[in-house]
Length: 307
Ligand code: HEC
Ligand code: HEC
Ligand code: HEC
Ligand code: HEC
Image (cartoon, rainbow, N blue to C red; front, side, top):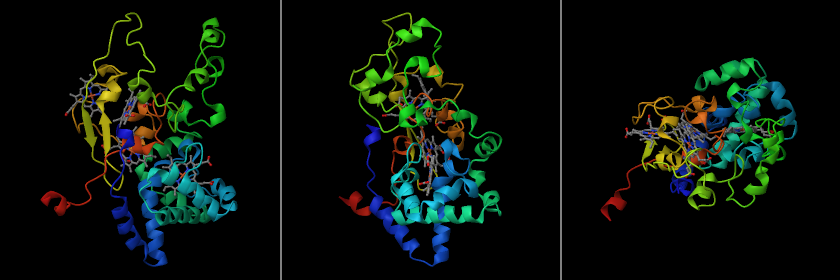
């Protein structure tokens, strides 16, 4: 399965970046900014899911008090509920991540003196605008999947979705009772739904009125090349059409033509494109590697071809 693809070129990537990192303190600062602009900006520019924003002295002050080693630790290993280890860029060397933390801490200490204004908000202008008017982007107000463990999977009368006045709501089985027996995942409601379906542990009905109706599953992968160091995105039709009708995506969300759609992380984080579902009813954006699963061809390997 795509989810389990491993990344063979890590050593190469680490080598390249270590060479860069051996420069002066200035080079180190540039490195920190470069890593921030590429990886961390996705959340720390707009304050997605409660991420402290770049240059927001107030948000950073209590964190800086915990000491730089604590912050390095959070950045390297992740911090519940929504800060992924290394911001998701697990192939970057530790030194790069630490440089990005240094850059963020320095920006916070600059506090408002232009650091926030010069923050590369351009990468997510819409997200930044949304965060300026509301504490969180509207798209995430219904994000059940990024909640802390204690608030996850409440019984139906308390989940804010089902009507507690309706007797039927109280007849529903509480999710936690069933989820225990299903394959686990690291995020969302902690169930690997694709695996649960593949292993016939669940049998969702395709049509509410016709128990015999079955989906038309289409096995077609679309690779979306990503600029920068993130692995390319593989969009799998198979795992989607097992649950969803073509009309759930075509033509409203996506024109059915490879490359015809403009997709970006900023749009996804705002609940558009893939974000119409991911972060709401499918695994959330913190799980970078499930989507960014295809390692780029870094350089042609001549020997491999000769053999
Ligand atoms: C998917 C969103 C996301 C990305 C990408 C991301 N962060 Fe975070 N980050 C968060 C959230 C959310 C928090 C707040 C966690 C909390 O304290 O609840 C956070 C908190 C932090 C903190 C403070 C930790 C603490 O102990 O208080 C640091 C430092 C940090 N991030 C560094 C980084 C760096 C460096 C990168 C890029 C390499 C990065 N983050 C990328 C979401 C993200
Ligand atoms: C979850 C959303 C989703 C569902 C459901 C879905 N698709 Fe797609 N489809 C996409 C995306 C994303 C692309 C890639 C668009 C791009 O690259 O800009 C795509 C591309 C396509 C393409 C273009 C292929 C090419 O090589 O140009 C066709 C044809 C297509 N889909 C047909 C279907 C059919 C038929 C179904 C139902 C059996 C279906 N899709 C269901 C999201 C979906
Ligand atoms: C639900 C699937 C999905 C998840 C999860 C996801 N991405 Fe993406 N990402 C995409 C798609 C689709 C694109 C657009 C690719 C293209 O240009 O066609 C993209 C593009 C990007 C880009 C290129 C610049 C941009 O903003 O478009 C970066 C960098 C990136 N993602 C980083 C991340 C990081 C870091 C994470 C984890 C915190 C992540 N992504 C999680 C689907 C995803
Ligand atoms: C209409 C809703 C919808 C849209 C739009 C959508 N997805 Fe999904 N996606 C799902 C559901 C539902 C699942 C299965 C449940 C889960 O894994 O959380 C899923 C699963 C996946 C998987 C996991 C496959 C596996 O083997 O575990 C990947 C990868 C993925 N989506 C990528 C994308 C990307 C990339 C886009 C945008 C181009 C996208 N999705 C758009 C609903 C959607």
